[in-house]
Length: 136
Image 1 (cartoon, rainbow, N blue to C red):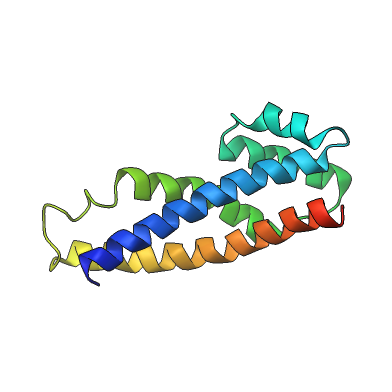
Image 2 (image 1 turned 45 degrees about the vertical axis):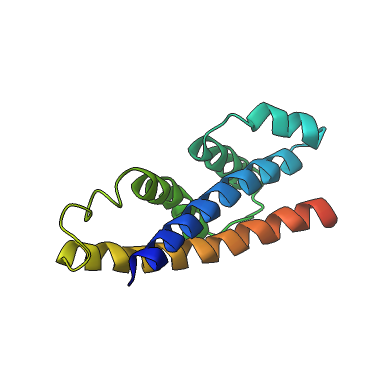
């Protein structure tokens, strides 16, 4: 993988993470039986982990199953994925070079994480759209 392709992939991962986090906050806001704008403002500063926990708790309490167990597992992984790409990915290979084994490993992880995030991003977006167009 060329460096430019790698850099673009990291940008896509960060984009997925930001969209997932933002959509999860809107999902939470839409699930509460009050003003969704006020609800969004209340959770806007929540971390992704806090929002996922709130939605999961409400989901299990109401027995709605908005997300599958695998979806919740992946949503919990998003935090670690985002942190890795934001804080560690380049450090893991930059001093050893693009021909190193470490670069190959990080490049493979990039493709794997992009695939995971692409899938869960679609699930999250689909629920957000459903909530605000059809209601739950």
